[in-house]
Image (cartoon, rainbow, N blue to C red; front, side, top):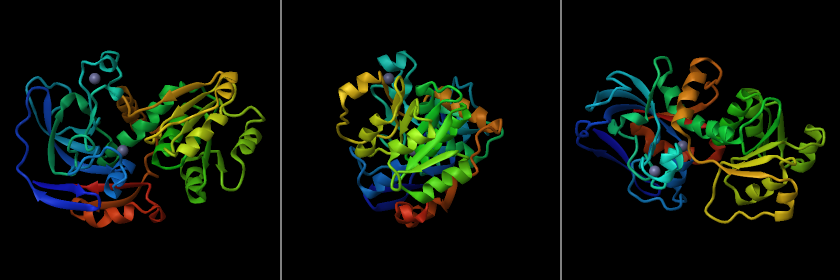
Length: 339
Ligand SMILES: [Zn+2]
Ligand SMILES: [Zn+2]
C-alpha cells in the first residue's frame, strides 16, 4: 500500500506500507479516492505550521469508499462513498458532552495530529463518515473545506438581508461567502488581491467586492451599507493586522467571527468594542451537523462546487506538485489529489 509521507518541511517520501488491520468495533476500513489540499497542508510543507510534528501523512479533506466495517457499525456499509469528518474527539470532555466535538479538549485532527489520508487505505471511526449516494468523489472531498465556512456562518446566526462582510478571499473566505449567501445575507468581500476579488464576483456571484489596496475599507463599507456598516463580519485571513482591524467594521450590535487564526495575541480597543456592544466569536473546524447540512445542500443544488477545483495530481505526483501549489501566483484555489 503506497503512502506519501511528509518527512520534514519540503520533503515527501513514498513508502510501501502493510495494509491496515481489519476494522474493530465501531470502525470502518476505507479506500481513499480523493484528498483535498488546503492551507494547513501547504504550511506544513513550507515548515511554518506552528506545533506541527514530522514525519506526518497529510490529508484531512477526503472522499473515500467504504471497504469493510467492524462489528456494530450501522451508519455505513461496504461500497458507500463518504466524506470524512477528520476531527477525532474524546467523547468525554465538557465540549464533547455539550455536542461541540469540533473543539474537544483532546481533539486529534486527521492529517494534522494523527496520520491522514495520503495513502490508499485507512481505518477511521465509522461515526466520522458521512455518506452520499449522489455526490461525486471530488465533492465529497470538498465537504470539509466547505464545513469551515458553514460552521462560521452558523456561529453568526445570520439573518436574511443583513450585510455580511468576509475579509480574505482564500478558500476559507470563499466557503464563508457561499454559506452566507445561502443564508440570504448580502455578502461583501474584502481582500487586497484583485484576481481573488474577481473570482468572488464571477464564480460565487458575490455582489460587493472591496479592494483594500485601492480604497479605505471603512469608507467603502459605509458607502455600500448606506452608512450602517455590516452587522456581521468574518475574518478569514489569519493575519494579525487584518484581525485587529476587523474590530472596526461591525455595526453597533453586530458580531465579529474570527475564522482564521494565528499564533499570537489579538488586541482591541475596549471602549470601541463596548460602545457598539459587539459579539466576538471564535470558529473552529466544523460539526457533524455541518457535514450533513452541506451534503444536503450540494445534493439539492444549493451550493455549487464547480468553481473550486483548480489543480489536480495523482498520489505519485504530490511531491512534484506541492512546491507549485504553495506559490500564490499559480492561482490555486483547491488542489485535489487522486489516489
Ligand atoms: Zn483543510
Ligand atoms: Zn472531547
